[in-house]
Image 1 (cartoon, rainbow, N blue to C red):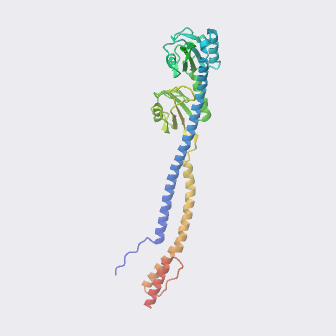
Image 2 (cartoon, one colour):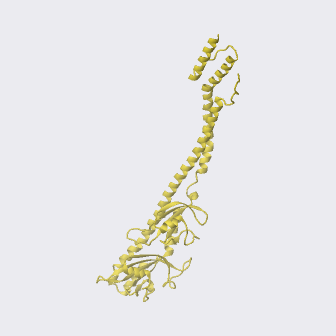
Length: 362
């Protein structure tokens, strides 16, 4: 009779291989899922933190501008009955000594300036300026621009010629008609300093972006005026957005876009505010920590599981292996009886069957 070749695969080996493969699969899956879960948690924490900081900058900056707007409105309500001397004194006080408001002026409906802080541009024609034309129609807020009529009268800053933000509002006379336009030129350098100080205090870079995507003010140096990035495209579209981006300096940033900068009655400048942080500087990158912890914990867990597997094989597979040896002896003609086992049930059944066979042979 032909005897088939005996397989080299035994039950203990098969179980050990299965357990080892399971441990390996579990380890790889746990590390992959753990890293992915931590990335998601990190991104959620980044978005929350960047949003809070960017929103805080938006509120603080808009509130500061709203104070100037309220001052403009208060002065406009009193201009109708003032003489020229009192008008200039009031505008000088509005401009103040801190140079936040670089120029305050009042022009008649034909565009002639009849009162201004420091007397600058008095008698001049501003009928072609946007702050005047738009101010005749209603409250107006204008984005950053270079000084034109005041270019020779206002000293240049460290970054070049003076730049202004505009605010203006119509002034209603005692007869109910528009008596002129009151305008403020706010120093754009103050706006940049305000946002830079906030950015440094909160570890976030801030950018004021115009509706066409041009950067008006940036707290980071050496940025081009226009960037082709998803965040800047979202800002130009007036959409809120967030996510990771590679910027022109080759660094990955987590970026948040707020579609407006406003507070209270402040007219819209059309700005969008963009905040960004470097994740590595803001939050510790945990993937390496996870791998290191897993490298320490998983071997210990695997060793414990292998020990349990060894105990299992001794208790449940070793009896079957002994019964196989007994069956070989019986098949070779030796008189022997199988050992009795308490477990497992299959071993008990095989042992009983072999005992019956031996008894029948006797």
